[in-house]
Length: 147
Length: 147
DNA sequence: TTGATGAGTCAGCAC
DNA sequence: GTGCTGACTCATCAA
Image (tube, rainbow over all chains, first blue to last red; front, side, top):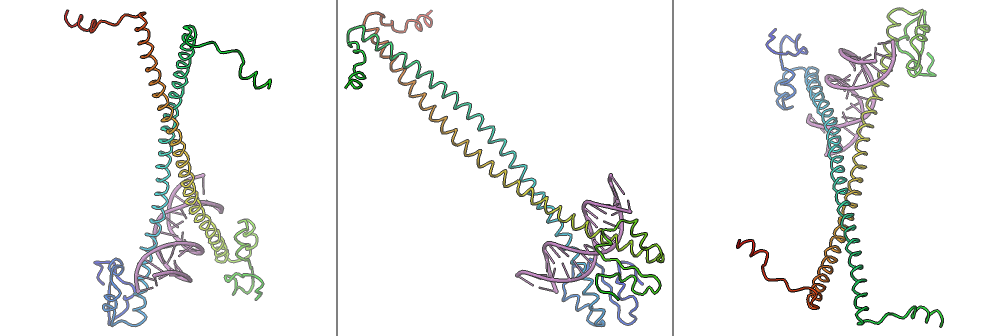
């Protein structure tokens, strides 16, 4: 018995016909090629070859299936990390912009303050210069309330 | 043969000793209890019982293992959704605050404009009233540069 | 011994 | 037939 390759036990005791196919070869082989190779074997042996081929195929499928699953899981875990980083980034940006907003807001109120102070002093000046008569006390309000 | 429960094939042909344990019972049973129950059996039959018990246990372990895996995957997928929602929320907030900031900024520049206009007109007025002499042209700069 | 898990096998579904 | 996947079995590791 040749042992240059993994051989097929199924044919060990076949005296007339002899077919030897390695696992990797059998697994890669098309069903047509296999049929040619085992054409002259008995029905049972043919079935045995096909079954072995199916098992070898299934082995690969199972491996692939498992890998696919774990890759998918790892992918969404990675995606999680990316999303978390994005949250950190946006939250930081938010903080920065809130500070800017608060500073502008403060600046606004200071400018308003200065402006209204100027307004008051200007009115005062004009009034003193006689360009504007002092407003009568409570004119409007008393008129309305006493009416 | 009783068929009121799943029975134990292993003992079908035992003529002297007879032990019948259902799968669920065998799986739940402690190893001590099992040993008591099968005390009088042959060594081979004892081993067969223990082996069946181990297989039943393993079946449960495998089930649990598979469920654990899929639950973990689902959990991180859920986590992904939550994170995405958080991003949307923070991004929206960021947009809102940016708008506020821009409005305050604009308001600031308008107030500044008004204020500097007032400043100019006030300076002009004072100058016209003779309280402030017109500034000589290029005094400082020419003095320095011509020195 | 118990529990968990990767890998191989099989059943069964979908194409 | 082919490929995929859930469930089972087994080998093997850790506790």
